[in-house]
Length: 121
Image (cartoon, rainbow, N blue to C red):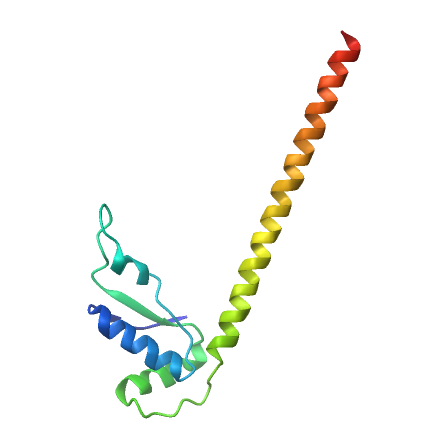
């Protein structure tokens, strides 16, 4: 993952995001959501755009200079998003299963302790 650029204007950030993703360049903007923060957290002053795959970095730089540049190593962003969503769902299910296993263990342990003291009392 390489830093492509830093931007102050949120509108320019979204314009570049659309440009890069439309041309098949996978990017990450770690502090994107701070732009809408209100209250205790101040919004970010600069937004960083990172190119996720190093192989796409040169194409991304060329695309910033010339919006008509043809990207050689395009990836399908929608397929990547589907994969990411499926992995998040899988991790949520796994966490739920772990929590349920621990809960069942504690319930069985509690019932066992209850009957142990009931029998020995």
